[in-house]
Amino acid sequence: MTVLSPAREQAAAESVLRRRRRPFAPYLLLLPTVAILLLALGYPLVWQFWTSTQKFGLAQQFGRPPQFVGMANYVQLFADPQTWAVVGRSIAFCLINAAITVVLGVLVALLMNAIGTISRLVLQVAMLLAWAMPVIASMTVWIWLFDWHRGVANWLLTAAGLDFTNHNWLEQPLSFYFVATVIVVWMSVPFVAFSVYAGLTQISEEVMEAAALDGASPRQRFFAIILPMVRPVLMIVTLLQVIWDLRVFAQIKMLQDAGAPTASTDLLGTYIYRLGVGASDFGMASALSIFVLVLTVALSLFYVLHLMKEDS
Amino acid sequence: MRTQRRRFRPGRLAASLIAILVAAAWAFPVYWMLNSSLLPNTVLTSTTPRFWPWGGSLDNFAAVFAEGSFWPALGMSVAITLTTVVFCLLFAFLAALAISRFRFRGRASFVLAVLFIQMLPAEGLFIAQYKLMSSLSLLNTVTGVSILYVAAVVPFTIWMLRGFVAGVPIELEEAAMVDGLSRTQAFFRITFPLLAPGLVASGVYAFLQAWNEFTVALVILQKEEYRTLPLWLRGFVQASASRATDWGQVMAASTLVAVPVIIFFMIVQGRLTSGLVAGAVKG
Image (cartoon, rainbow over all chains, first blue to last red; front, side, top):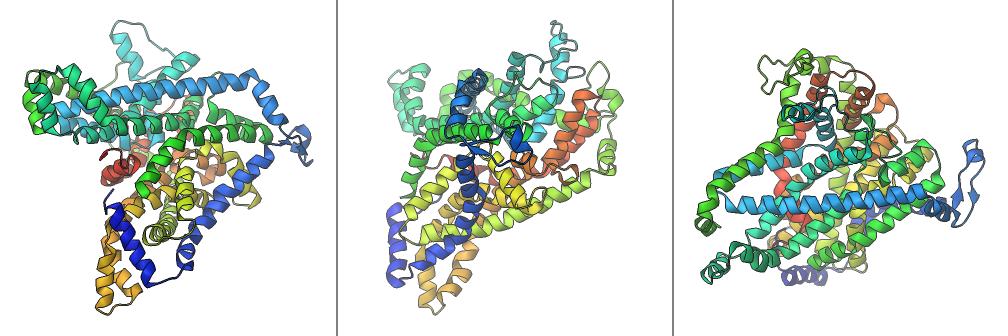
């Protein structure tokens, strides 16, 4: 972002303050935002906390008011092995995807940095295309690519000598997650690659030249110079990737819609959806939603504090 | 990084080759969408895929347009997206002014709250939002979805705009006021035009978010006649699970949804990256 130095920005703000003391003006300016955030996020958040202490059973579906049960929903939720299966799968999926994405993203960024203008432009355009694709459009294309009957994936693998004729990728959880990983990594790598590449271009040429003159091998240059210098951007990008890969609702839901069994492929988002919208068990769905929110806020803490430093 | 070229020269050709291969692999799904959208179903269902759109036509697009459900979905998407963009820009602009032009009590907590809210996943709230909209009788309405979208998009938009507002030196306004303009005049005649690029970038960001959104829409818009384009696309995929799908038409439909997004995305890409990893790149 551009760009006043913090000191100058503050001086500017103070000069406004000095000239005109209208302490209510900023609050007035914030009013619409605060109002809509309270309505669309604040109220649901409070409702969710309250609801997670209520029991929604069969009787409630027939109009009986829900019953206060304290922490019973949480106890029941985390006593259920199905919950732990979903949580475990989500965390594993998230970490594996984030790791693969960051490693590939760094490799692509290094590649962008190492090649000439024309091939770099080609690579960047391809990455931008994948990045720009709307999630749902990407999902339809990938589902078509992995179509059991006429998908190109099966055709290519069969042509390569493996028999994948009419192979259904979505039937088995492991191959379901493999497809999901391919898709999520494909759509996430460009962001990492562009961010890290931007970081790489900031490394001064003198430093790299000096290292080369002193006889540092490419390997040494990568681990001793490049990596420490792009560490800040790498950390932010990795953190964002972990947070984003926890929320892969659209991708998983679309793959399930294309014919996968839901119970064995649910991740947190789709499981909450099934509990809440499918089974109308709002108490349990709310309890699990709270868990997801707490997890996200904990993960976001570092990122948010980093951005706050930017602000002051 | 011009000098790096010299150093990597021996491996440069190999690196360029790898880069082209990676580019081809990454662009392939997008290419395949366009390719399939141009080919008739008889070609798509033959045993050997055709990798070039020879003998292709725009028939699939015509079929999508002729089929009744595209236009209402487009209408819903346009209505929701426009509402979201307008209100999001308005609210975010006012809030960005507040946090970058004023120092006031609670400013830091507001910024902190905005940054946290920006991170909240739809998955953690959509059940509660569904109940909220149901109690307000706003299920299956443009208003209901737009309210949730504005709330979801406004935090990051404020963050984006804040940088732009802070980038216009207050001295410019002050100089204009010395020359006799009122504070409001000075703002609208001097600062506002300078903010135009920022408003465009933030507007495009809000557009992309609202146009692509799936999770909230799925929960709030449950009736078929109120589907947005992403939900409409999902309908095709759902159908593909049970019966033979006309993939040519599905790919034409995907293309129609994706093309405006790809164009707009190119406009904001740079700002989006720098906004998300703010400070980390420049160190």
